[in-house]
Image (cartoon, rainbow, N blue to C red):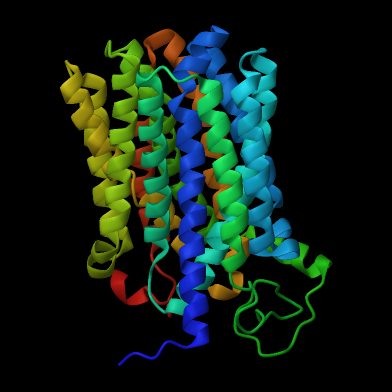
Length: 419
């Protein structure tokens, strides 16, 4: 008979709260992405100009991620995610009305959207790592599967909204209110960030693990340790690995609907359905992927998935008709599924430095969202958006080369899986 202690109850509540944070982050991203074609048409944007508009969201995320380590350290993951959920809701509400008044209203709202999303992302990953340690088993990929569940739900609601001719304003405004309310209420169940012994460091090396001397952590020492994290070769390589997969994922989120309509001649509803299929494939990969990681290890699994994603891209770009493009979107999403969560797990291998390293890796990874939209957009002006997606294949090849960086650190919980 299993005894449920107060501590167990708290961990279960925190686990549910982290799932909700991931799920509604996904709902937010997909709700906006599902209406990109309609916003583009209302504003009369070319692919390159649309890419620049999407750049505003990525720029907000990058600015936020550069500060996220300090924000989460100072305010804690609970207050950070709660506050950013409310701010993101306000930003989405701004997009819902702003697109009717011109491109700059959308750009400003997307920048705030991105800023809220960046700090929210780091905060929920930090809390996810804490829950993972308390549970004593790997669960991070399934938290990210929660994000994918949210993206699928958001995309399907978007499909319905487009098919029923529901306005962008009504769709996004209602979604914004729901997201803000759910996130603010759910984060109350987050556990404390300082759930274990304070990270041990030595005065001579702020990144050293294993010292038993007590250290008083000041704002200056936190900043010093954060800067030192940016000089760690493995952390940087993991960040570039995550960037490659984030670019793969982001390109699908931003451009599948548009390219299905423009290059494959699909209707708006069919284009959004292809987007939903891509997200569903990512969700399946993240939910069913952990046993593969446990059995075969991180490195071989992510390399095989990168190859699957390459195959999907080839079918999507070269496919002669819409059904083949749908198969390509399926493989593309499945192959892209585990790169980001595996990178986050690799960044959090050492609990003493998880927050700082997750912040650095996320910051590098989000550069894909900074450079990806304008790159695909500018290439799309010359060779069509569909053909511009060849750039994704290049970065997937980079991810295969760098996959060794995500091998678990010696002595970490997952170390046994990659030998």
